[in-house]
Image: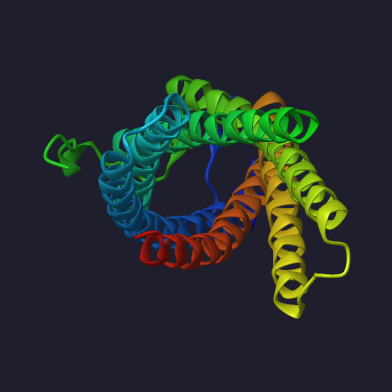
Length: 144
Length: 141
């Protein structure tokens, strides 16, 4: 075990995962799974909110701003679903890879983590864009 | 999960292959982007909250209720949580890049520790978001 730690601190060709890394990875997989389940719950409420908004919009005969908000919300909801799906994949496959020392499953798990961050990045860009639009429209309304 | 490779391919220990390193590098890049976008998002959110307060107070200066003050405090708390999660994510990406560049298991260890911390913070934030979406959904109609 000691020898393994010494090797890990050296600059070797391969980056091996020692016990300390595995412990932190296990923790990341566990919390990743919790976060993924919560994201699925959030997704469920988002879908509910989306349908409520749609029915409210059809009652009021939607304007172009309402349509824009609906499209943004739909994209946002899809991003939430895919990020939750990828995160669950990362956690489940990661746990299996640690139990079985399977490098292929571990690489699929890392791919899923990248997918999670990718969808989360798109999702965050959409909300930031939404806030930028809201900020400038607030100014436009106030000064008109 | 059906496409999992057979267990005969299992090795004695896990190591990072070139493909994994490439994917982890992309993950680190996305994480850096998200951490920066998080700070921009918080800035825009703060500006929106501030401008709405300024515009509403210019119409009715003394009409701020204790509930509005409470909501503002909760918003400041959530904003600080978002900023902290962004900083943690930036640390994760920084240490991950460092680990991949210098082949250091120590940095890799720290980066995964930051990743789990980031997931914990995100879970707390998501609880607030779920409460918020429930409140909006059931007051909409």
